[in-house]
Length: 360
Length: 163
Image (cartoon, rainbow over all chains, first blue to last red; front, side, top):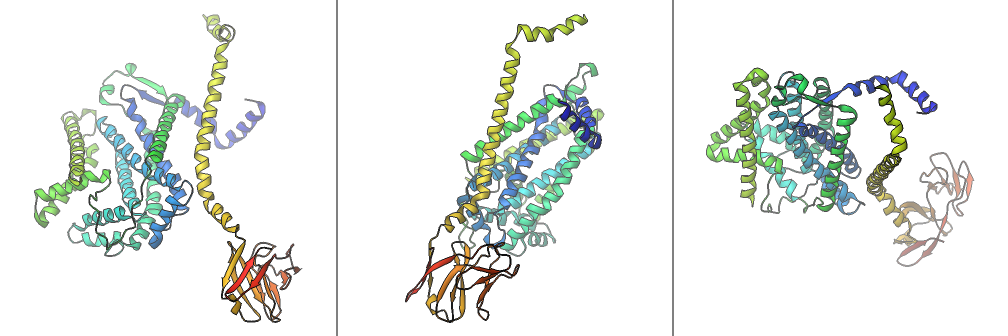
């Protein structure tokens, strides 16, 4: 460092305490073992969220909610230079983000990283996944083309099945009895104001917890004696690999967004019959199909309610897993949680497959 | 042992002169690749954000506007219209003369107003005044006159074009 840069550094350091940060980063380590690969998926989810913020702001420059929604998306896609690319990147990155979050969640689950003291990490992560799926659901409607219109119409029927308060919830979300420009307007407010306002602080909390407790190690690694466990320096080793993964993600995203640009269907029209094969986005396929199967299995209105209850119960159990399988000493409970996880993965994959099979 | 630990640094420099160069080459290549990424991201974003400007640029290339039925404009009145993307005015003076000029104040770009009773053009923003026949800046802050257009009145309307 030349003396000039050194003196500028000193000036800033004195005021912001940069060297504390550098010293801190130097001492931070990340466990190194055969399962370390899974540590990158949280970072990948974060990267894709940042992409969402950037591309989202760019879309916001020309998007007009309400009655003009479809026209403005048509303009973005076909009139503005590279608008198709930015919209495509936003859609692809949204899907990749949900995928990365799911991989992250299951890796945390099977590495038992939700155990004490990381319960809040698990809970905040589940809340972030919940918000991400509302992001996905609300964002899907915004172009107001045929597909998004009917998918939203069908999706909003699901809460309507809840006894007594169901219809109120549905109407509240829809902003009326039908999906129309009022629905777009409130989904837009949800998508660009409400959800980011909730998501960003929660994400900060989640990241702070990761920082506070460090990376969890899988049980196989935990059983090794301390001196047999390997670590790598966070900075620059892990950081460099993390950035490498971000670069890979960026390349995959760029490839998908440009080679398979997101399409825009015809403008939504209530009087035009729904095109065949309307189905939810892939990440909603499994819950949608589960509810459908439970509805068939338990017929009638009572069956519908029972299905909804059973489904909710499954999710609640999933969320509460850190309190059931709380520590290394859990033993039998730990194994039970493992099988519950395998069952969840199987149910998710099977219902998704059945879902796609039946819409064909 | 300590002198052994000290030497590798020197050995590297003398016996492997290629290594620092490869390192430099690697950093240069990484920097170049980074620049390529930045350019590949920045170019589409720039073009995307500049789209309306580009579209309006092609609109300002307009050289002639036909104002349908404008020949019916009464004496002592004004018709505001868009010449390309920018506001312009067609004045039918009391003496029967037809004058068209841009309606964008040369001071800071406000839209100016024709005042028939004073027979002048006035800008509400900072009080600039222009001559309603020649467009010349008479008083106030405007640095330049308003540009006149060529006017041709026919039975169907009024053609306004760049001079």
